[in-house]
Image 1 (tube, rainbow, N blue to C red):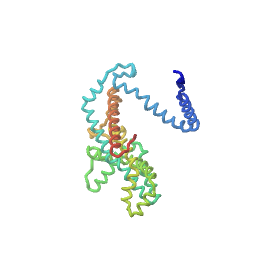
Image 2 (cartoon, one colour; image 1 turned 90 degrees about the vertical axis):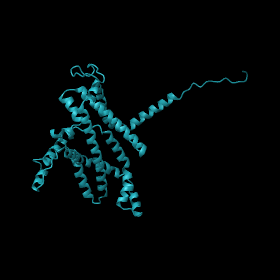
Image 3 (cartoon, rainbow, N blue to C red; image 1 turned 90 degrees about the horizontal axis):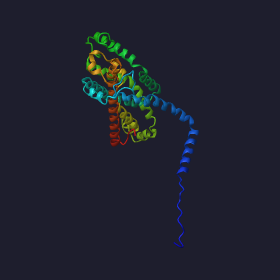
Image 4 (cartoon, helix red, strand yellow; image 1 turned 120 degrees about the horizontal axis):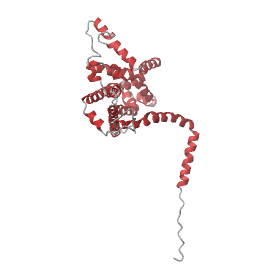
Length: 323
């Protein structure tokens, strides 16, 4: 139309310039902090090599694995291994034992480091505090093989030092390692002794982040030690408590191999056999790699469900979670 200026379409797009600016910022950041990236590459490489690449072995659970043919050349078997697992009576026994021992560990072992950390934090004598802290976390560096030997030397029914003292006092020997109930108690107690000190360090580190002015203000208001612990100390370390609790719940379906294997004996097999020792017997001793891998995959899936559920409940109840 006459008198109307033509409309010129703007074909210019800022996206290439934005991408170029982002690329320059990334390169500049990498150049300034390359030492940090180099340090970060070491744990990333560790997880890549030892955690992610081996995941291809999960396919063994769905194959009739033959070690001479390899993983990829072995024929597919579908979910036959899982059907066989769920038909095993021993599988339900070891699953029950795994959940039971982990639940007892969670009830007894989880609050112990929190209590120890609070007690150490309230101690005024620095030399005693440091000495007690060192004594508490030293067992963490002792192998379970050594701890197992110590347990047998101390608690064995016939030759153990503790039962020898009981007999000298005119008391009956206690079957710490042969009676199922006493064995479970010994198992949990040994775990507390070995791990409590290391967990205490984590909570002591969290306690250092609490503002000391809060305690001073509480003293001005006339609050005693227990009131300060309840209203300041515990809320101050609550995020750490929740994160570690979620992680522990996520590990309910998994259990270490060394402790049940070392402390077990034929008299308590019905309570000492757990998933890790069951997988060892099937995979290593019986060479049933498909069944062992299927059990491990089942264990990982159940652990993931526990972890996601615990994190969801924690977010709903306390507003805090891992993510």
